[in-house]
Length: 362
Image (cartoon, rainbow, N blue to C red; front, side, top):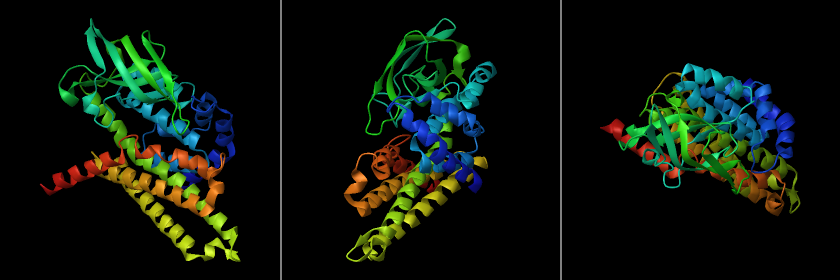
């Protein structure tokens, strides 16, 4: 597994970083996605092994955050199709997604429903043998440029049991969207469904089982969000150690000041603890433990909060130069904020952990 992490890290630095720099900020970078496919990394994502996914995401995050994000979004959008689509639909999309020829997106969040996925309002009303989708999705990565969306909509008012998943082609009539600009220039947008027609063959799983399909996908990907954080944290720590070993202040290197070196020692310890939490959650998932909700929540919570702290400390010891546009740490400072929110904010992870604790105690 260490070999996979190092391979991903090397590809991130040596291959994907250049492709990322050539892309338009905030827009889907198809050459980057295709390169991920050409190097066989997307195929590994669709194998569905959590430990490998975490290794990939940590390595790529160290070398090229844009490549890490592109890989993760492709997996997140395509995994419901892989696991829950009818064979014909799966055979149509998965080869193209794993090769990087087509791009997928995971369409769950709405203006009034983010972490509370059971509160979705996008309607899927019966229309003959199929359905019509009406409503809005927002904060959807790869929107509005994706080729296929794993969309979760309400087919009844029965709470979580009333949600159904659909594979919706991006070219569907009545589907429109717009780009949204974020602090970190990720490809994110809004989708509007104006009576978009979907057939029964586009249902992911069974009607009414969409919430389970979405949660199964998030169970796999939540620990790997932590791995993304660990990759960024390690890159920040590496930069800080290198800089403080060379930078002179008051006649000696910054590394000789305990106020500096002890902060980095603490960060290094937290990064390793986060890495072990991630490994535990991923190994549980690969061993068939279901659900892995508490372990996944712990891993994502601790790792993403650690990453934020690590980048902040690295900037502090670098001083103002780290805030200059184009500096690695300026880039990481913008990138590191979002993972504490998406796929369940830190506050939501704490709630999940607390609920699971009380379940175990009862």
